[in-house]
Length: 112
Image 1 (spheres, rainbow, N blue to C red):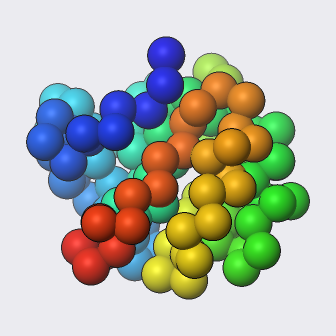
Image 2 (image 1 turned 45 degrees about the vertical axis):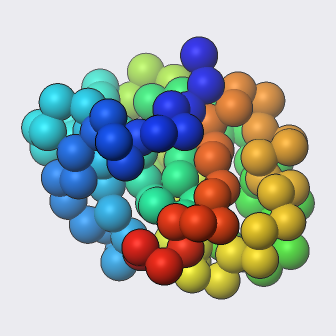
């Protein structure tokens, strides 16, 4: 299952983390088991992310940083798009993500 590219319509913004939005399907705050989507322009579905690090390695402008997510069933760390405002829309992160957990939409850049 890949990230929902229309998450802005199907998810609710429930929080802000490191100056980016956090979205969940049910409007509930994230839990250890259900982390939701972090970011808007560069969105990472924490519930799909397996933390292989490809996006961190390939991003030419260092959009992502590791953030701890203890207790999550997939991994205890996630690639967080903390610097999504620096994204140059190269789509490398989308291309290298083995589980399709990342969506970059240049049209959402103005809605950070």
